[in-house]
Length: 473
Image 1 (cartoon, helix red, strand yellow):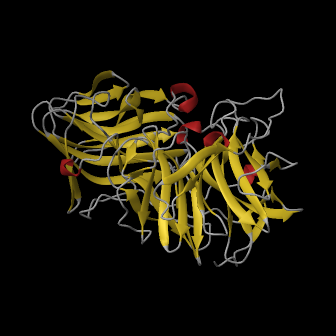
Image 2 (image 1 turned 90 degrees about the vertical axis):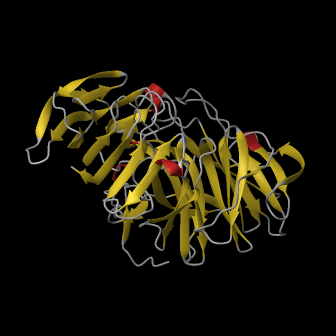
Image 3 (image 1 turned 30 degrees about the horizontal axis):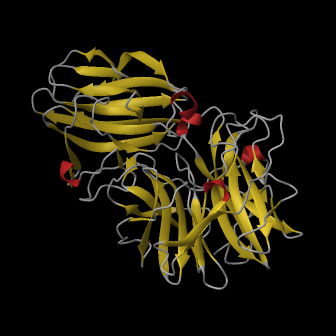
């Protein structure tokens, strides 16, 4: 790894994410000089987007490990063992694993591990045996190939006794990540709940001379926690520790940004130093923020861009990309009823998006949305008789024009929404309507999601989308 870039001491409010947007539950590995990262996908597919870096700061998306939708994907653990890559994850209430010889794929079909609990974490011992850690302090041995379990599950850790009074969402002992260092087995877990009060989520450490305990808690727990809601980063937790190629240690975790919880949980990075056999998180960070990955798409490639995910499905017969256009077969009756929008994760506090939309088929509607889920969305849609403004299940005429092609623009100006439309050959026209959407987040709506930007088509026909543009403001 090239670590020649200057680093500096950063107060918590100066920390910047290494991956901005709703990329929660980060899991990271190093293979030689290369670093790989993936996250929870929740209800979106394709899932488990693999990111690559050579400096831990700037990350490039490579490929999705799960290319089909088979339920919501939560809390993955990326592992590398004896020349193979593994991802352990929870979906549909079960724990699965996939394996690949190359991080770019192809990946195997998911294997059901037939074990309870959530948040599986892989651990290979120095003697070659492999174990799986799960929520609630549980552990079970894996077979040599890592694709099945054997023996009985045991509870080996009781968590850190959170001192009360305090403000947490719940005890929620989860996200176990285990590693071996200098004769000690370390267990890093999350507690306090992943959302709720700003101070709830936290990272705790424990160690043992044996892989199966007993574990002693770090005297300085928690390693990371939001101290007060006045801080910039809330609900800091779900962490992995990693040693870089020059022997420095780092912690990767997720956090909400105060005032912008609707963006979801960003991926964060801080330096770790070791004292008396315990990890301590320092204030050291990079002197300049990481570069952002562009989200605009002209649909020139026959493959769907890395940034796009369908909500609740992955039907490859439904779309055709290439030549500057994306054709999308309409589905359902509205964004609330089975349209399975195609979404991206915005990165910024304020931004605008626009896209050229063309519809075919009587009764078809298609448009551009700010989309949290099927109960909370707003945007503009083109129909065969007018341009429609949608807000949740409510809809109204915005422009009374029978056009089948127009360019739509949405502005999210620090939660204040503007709606714009342009007919071919004309000027931009702002719709005399606005909304405020700061409350569209997990604490209000549930789901552990972040606000997305979405393209959708509903009804009997199809829509063609061209020249999608995302711009930070």
